Length: 472
Image (cartoon, rainbow, N blue to C red; front, side, top):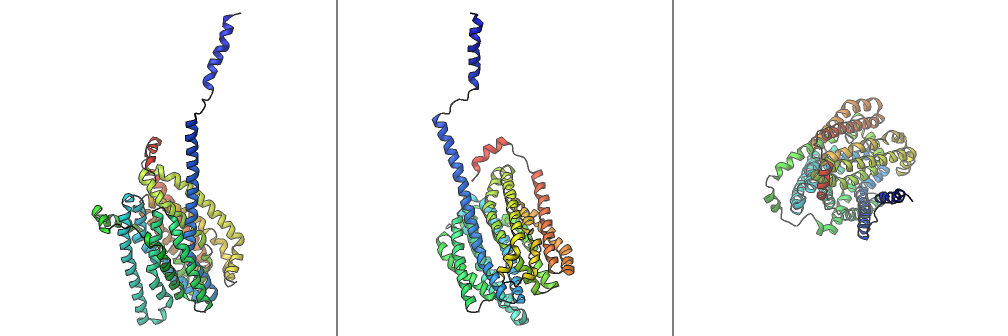
């Protein structure tokens, strides 16, 4: 036998051995199982938190949604139009409060002051109380001035807004704090109790025939105050406010540097959608303003889901950008944007199919003459939704000036496009104008976001892995 023929099979066997995958040891399998279980737990924890956030957001605005529907069904269109305008004023005041307190509080509290959060939260809690008291006094004084100079404009609804606004805005501060502490279950518990208390009060007013705009605001304020009793022990921080200023003596300069852009944004934010109620009232009548509000009420549920998702993601986006810059922020934003685009598209299809029927049932047929406009307004959440994801990303990047520019652009579109549409097409023109303003808003945010992404220093994959330990 040729010795070469005997060696060859052994050589082939020897060469084939490295191709076989080494068997996993019990320790390696155990570690892999632990990682898989850990990822599964994280996934379900995020789903659980999202569910709590949706519950919180739905119940937190559910009371005013019920008030809107009840007033639209029982009041004249003119009376409901007055309430719609006052609710728009509250939205404006909420924007100012967001600019003065909540935006910087969320970004800085979740980012640069994350480790000093107890004292920081207590410090902002006291500042928020002073601002809300001042706002309540200012609006109440304005109502009293109207009673003296122009009593025909001193609406009881305005008085209800004046007395309630400070409490409603403080409730927003408390809920935001719970999200920053990553405890959405507290926010959901707070909002759930509010909703059922408010719903009971509204039902009582409805049954006794005393439901009006003043009662709607007053019942919401009372319900939030009563619900606040269950979270008294959880109020922001127990550290002294002086502790934070000792560590950050120049804080207000930093706060103003960020908040000034948000404040300017709040002043022009009204022109994106809320301004159309005032334009409809001015160029058409209060009746048309009420009709436009009734249409947008059907889009409110999705708007609240959007707010719920944003409340969860904004602190996370902020911490990711602080720790990893774009390498941490961009992947999460992409998933956020694509997921929200899918949700809003499905909602638009549902509105196109069932919107008119739902509107007929909700308002008992009182607004059937404008129900056809839902075909156009169904696409408003789709357009705004994409823009709002970039809005959150830019805030996390501490670029509020870009958001301000987007609102200025949309406000310009409202004036240059919306007003002519309203004059020529009436309430239909207002619906088309909202779509135009939303498109300009989203396009401007897209340009700004891509510009910052382009100039932002890139982080290598190796640097990303080294910084992963900094993620929350």
